[in-house]
Image (cartoon, rainbow, N blue to C red; front, side, top):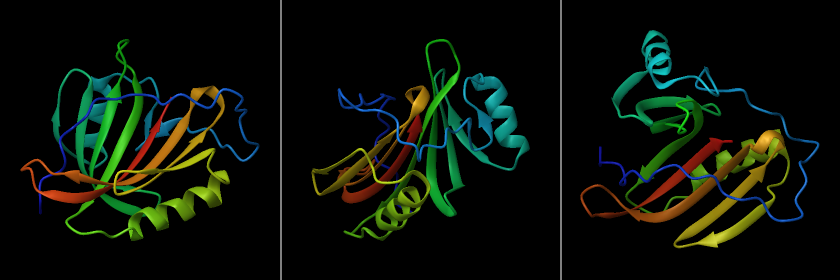
Length: 164
C-alpha cells in the first residue's frame, strides 16, 4: 500500500455568513464510538479495546488504520484534540494512485441521504469539495483532490472530515 499524504493539522472551516442549520441535520455526538470532548488517553484505550488499530499518536492527534465509516472502510483516520484536550474532529482518508471519484461519489450520496444537500460545493485542485454545516458548530466536509503522498508521488485522496 502506498503511504498516506502528509498529515495536515486540524482546522474548522467557517460557515457562510447568512447560513442557518438545515432541518435535515442530525447532530453527531461521537466519532468511531468516542464521544466528542473525550480526552486523548481515554480515546486511545477505548479505540484499542474496541478492536481498532492505533498506529501512532501525539498530544493532539491519534492515527487509526482501517476503520469503518458510512458503511465503507477507510485506510487511515485521524482523530483531533483541541487545546483543552478533548476530541473535536476527525479525518478519514482514502488514497488512490489514479483519478477515481467512486469513493467520493458514494460518500456524497450517503451524506445527502442523511443530511440533505451540502451548504457549499466547490471545485478544488484536481477535484471537488462539499461541506455541510449543522447545529452546535458541527460540520462535515468531503473532498476529492490531487495530492502528493508521503514519498512525493502524485495521487488522489478522498477525505471525509467530521468536527465541531
